[in-house]
Length: 106
Image 1 (cartoon, rainbow, N blue to C red):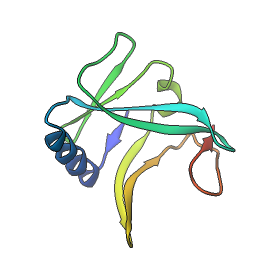
Image 2: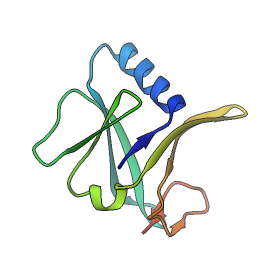
Image 3: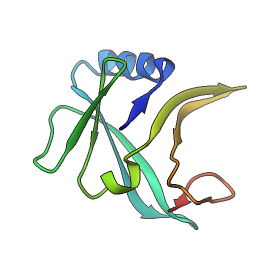
């Protein structure tokens, strides 16, 4: 089950409105960094055959079949800390994070 906080949902809806189209966000993983995996987030207009769609706070979150085992219990938040802001991924399956926070290991 993918969960999107209210703050993250507001930001996603705002970005989709600015974009002018889209049904939601796609979250996946790619191999990179010193810990092995990194999150990928993109706004999407349609789904693929191997996608699983979650609805949370009126936002569709789409996860591809390859990423689903890694992201199955993901919480997505949107945080502001000083001058920095962005999406934060809370993944109970992540065992270790890179020192810079860019990549993780399961």
